[in-house]
Length: 105
Image (tube, rainbow, N blue to C red; front, side, top):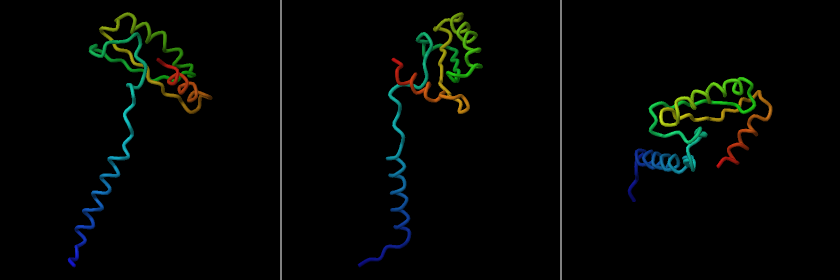
């Protein structure tokens, strides 16, 4: 019977760790994250991304300005993407974000 050295053990351990890392990857989402305003073109030269909290008064105050900019330039020039970013100190912000994602088209 042939005795294998510690090098073989470490090789097997490395292979097992790599296989575990590959198998434990998070699956890709079924669609890109965020909401694209008015179906902006992916080939638009300007991509504007806003991170908002649905219950945040500052996000609410900034929305008309961002919307006006996106409307002024059009979807061919600007692709405006809205990313939900619920802040922990706004009560029920996380639940509002989950509901909006769940019921989006």
